Structure formats: C-alpha cells, structure tokens
Image 1 (tube, rainbow, N blue to C red):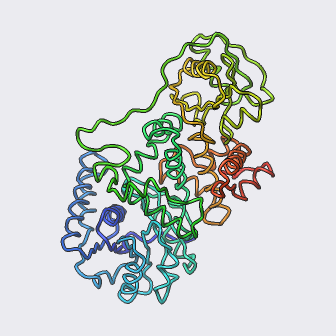
Image 2 (cartoon, one colour):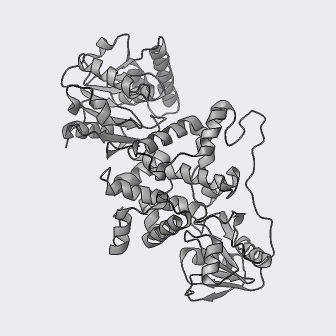
Image 3 (cartoon, one colour):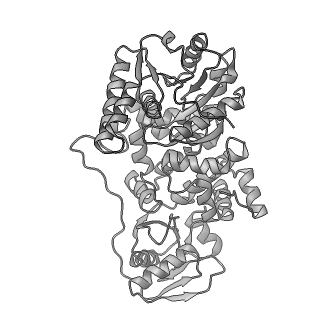
Length: 509
C-alpha cells in the first residue's frame, strides 16, 4: 500500500474553477503549499480570494481556529505560468471536460515537472487510459475525481487506467484519506462508478414521464417521501443542469457503444434544444423565475375507510400496514401469507407489491380483476407517501377501497398510470442491477459501489444494500418482468445478480 504524500509536498492545481479551487482549498487545509494556475486572466486571484473567504467563514463558525485559517490561506500561491509548477510533487488537472485539451496539457506538463511528480485528472467521465496515452510515461497518471462542492463532499473516486502504476493509485488513495476524504477505487470504464450507476435514477424517471406515469412533481414526491431520496430526479436534474446531465448520459451511452441501458431521453434532448436547462436558465422541468408558482404533487382525495380490512402475512409492507392501523385504533383481520402474494384486501380489492408487471397483466394472469399494486418504499413504517396503480379491469369501487385502506394507515396516496414496475421499484432495481454489473465487470468492489453512491449522490442506501433489503430474488424477478413487458435489452439482469440469486449468496456489503 502507498503512503500519503507528506504535507510539505507542494501540490499544483491546474484550473481555478469551482472544482479546481475546491481541491486547492482541501489541499491547503491539509497543510500543503498549493500552486494554483488558470489560463484565464484573473481567475486565480479570484479563486484565492474565494478560498480565503471560505477559510474565514470556517474560523468565524469555530470549525477551525483563526491562526489555522490564516496559515491555510497563506499556503495558496498563484502561478502565472505553467513552468512555475515545476517543483510540485502532485499535480491535479481540473480543466474543461475535453480529451484533446487534457492530453495537450499533460503532454506540456510532463516536460515541466519532475519524473517523480504524480499526475492526476479530475475528469468525471473521460477515459483515464485515453488521457494518459498522450504521456511518454502513462503509468504516472491516475484519476482523482472529486465531487462538487469539494470541501463538503467526502467522496473521491481514485481511478486507474490500463497503464496506471499500482503505487500511484495507492499513493493517491492514501493522500485522499489524509485530506479527510473517503476514497474508493475504480477501474477506468465509462462513467467510473457514480456517473455510471446513477444513470437509471434519471433514465427511468424520464421514461416514466414519457409514458405518462405521472407529472414531475408527483414523481419527485414519490422518490422523496417514499424512497427517502433528498431530491427527486427532476428537481435534481434542474439543479445539475439538463445540458450537463444529458451530456453525461450521452457520453456513457456512446462509450458503451449505444447500449440501450444508458440511452438518453428524447424529452431531455428537446428541453436542452429549447434552452430549458433548469435553475440556471430560469426554466427546466419546473419554473424557476422569482415569482413562479411551483407545481404540487398529485394526491388522491380522502376516501372512506373500508368496512372490512384484511392483512396477509408479515412482509415489510403487510407488517407496516398492521402497525399503522393499530396505532390509529382501526380494526382489521390478520391472516397468514396468501399463496398468490396479496398483502391486503379491502372492499373487493386485492393489494399486492409490484413485481415489475403492470397491474392489468397481473390481474389478467391471476384472474383477479380488482388488482391494485403498491410501489416500493425505503421504510413502509415511516414513509409518508405511497404510489399505486390499478388494473384497467379493476372496478372503481374496489380501487377506492384500496386507497381508503392506505390512507387509513396514514399514507398520502399518489396514483400512477399502470406502468410496469411503477416508479421506485423499477428504479431501485435498475440501480442495484447497474451496481451489480459494475462489480461483475471489475470496475470496483461491492463495498466501494455502495459507499460511492451513498457519499457521491446522497442515496439513502447503497444500491446493493437496498437490493438485499428488497430481496435479490424479487429484484431479479422485477427486472425479468420489465424485460418481458418492454421487450428491451435495457432491463437485462446482470449475470452477477443472477448468480447471487441462484446461489442464495449476498454481495457482502
């Protein structure tokens, strides 16, 4: 294992934008003399002023003492020319996401810095192998992908290209740890860990919108209130910028030779073409003008509590329904698990957890016309909202009774169109599947993918841990049913996920 660079090792940062200045702040706080360069006139001075103000605010809040803030600020040194970076022991590039520009920069820098200087790129999606190929000594370069805002986000992806020397990656990993970060190792493949595994969060939401499952506000509310995500996919895309999000999707899709699993959305493409880029343009999936009225989630009107309620078995949803009804003093009958998997009955409706089929298909195949499907929730005991879908052949009175039961248990209910897999279930299963494939293809370990997705995207659970909570056999069944429903390779199950199901093993996360 490599050792962290000594704090007296000078660190050079090329690029004084948001990422470069954030990395410079972290390195200076860790005790390094930081040489900051940017090709744009005045950019370095502005960045150092911003970083200094950040140190001052930290001191005012008592997070660091005033002396430490002043010392860290003094370690920031502007560089007017690239040759002033010659004495650095680590050089991190944080310029525009363009392969040719990065190759040209590193080719120039290789002739300036010493052979012992480690080189790192902060690229979020470009092949580290391709960037390093421009060097005469490609083994000295690795990826060191920080996340924005760098001082607050702890995740760093340490990425090895085909030529990266093990000691280089080890040293960068140890250095990130010494800087107070939580590094994970990855192999240089499209999207690395986070930008690859996160694609279904956006892609499935966009497909749901395209299929008329619900509006953006309703879908976002389901992801937040049932799934425990901090932001729904549409509000998150508005924050990131639709153009940025689309560019990453296109990059990953293209790099995987147009694999349908990563296909970009025509809706997003149209919005970018229209200039509806999200918050920065004043309009995206939501209006962002100062006086704009934000759309509200679709909530079903309150319905009467059904006269007869039955709960079956003790799966997580059935148990939560029982507990929530008991807390509210409501009477119901409890029975053993039903052979057909129904969780509850109310007013003639049979309520099931979605398994990746539409309610209409499931009702037709089981002969139960009054089929109502409930979506996944992170924790049915604390969730405030549930999404449902009803079979087209379901009688209106039965659907109303099912809504009344869920509302009686304290849930706000949102009805989605009868799409296969509903919203959360299909998305979480796709996230788990993508994570499994990343492990299967030796991009990273199971522990690394879960850590990366929790820290890099603030997911409430790592996707593999969430898949194990759901039950890997159910995840596999949902994907299989989605693949059958859509007839698309997009929903093919990872061979590693299938292997875990057949063997009864877990991912050990």
